[in-house]
Length: 220
Ligand code: DC
Image (cartoon, rainbow, N blue to C red; front, side, top):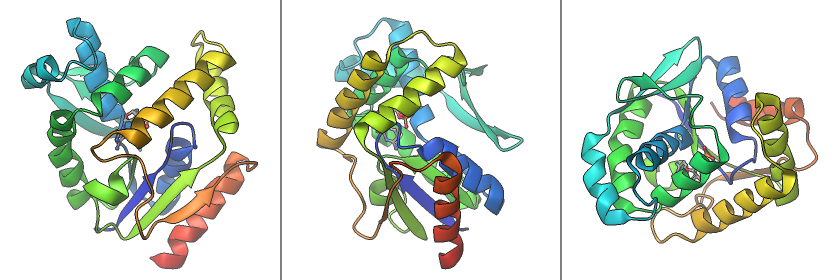
């Protein structure tokens, strides 16, 4: 199987770009952030603090997460309920970042991610795909952009989806998550040693998608 890892900070355009590239290549697109978001959503629903490692470890036994791929779209199924839309709120973003720093949460999701990659030609995006989940990925890309531009893109996405928020709130969320994700002791956000670093600041979506597709096609 061909596995392509795309890592990078929130709002770098990973999901939109990886999805378009996967469709072009006929690969499955796997958004691993959605898995952490599903756990964040569940933990909020239980009324447990999103940094309470001991309670979260116990709560994990009540969680069953599956990914379904319908017409190239990933759906996240949490305890038999499709939560694909519910996990896209600012509150769940922050909860996902919090729970993702807890080692047992990462271990819980590790096998699921590995088994999807072993069964599919895929582009998998996240924070630690090239460094931890798929260290032998065929291609590793680290996608980034300046924080203001990432916040602007996320803000525009929220507005399109009808999520109520402000640019300042999104900027604060992005900065906080960048800090959390890059500074946690376990599987922090950082480029793999052999990652190709691509900065999409100033690019429109089509330009970024073309760069990624060309980068991949040159190598496979
Ligand atoms: O990609 P995203 O914004 O949907 O991810 C939500 C959070 O999940 C992110 O802030 C950190 C965490 N995450 C992670 O720790 N490792 C991954 N491979 C993917 C996401």
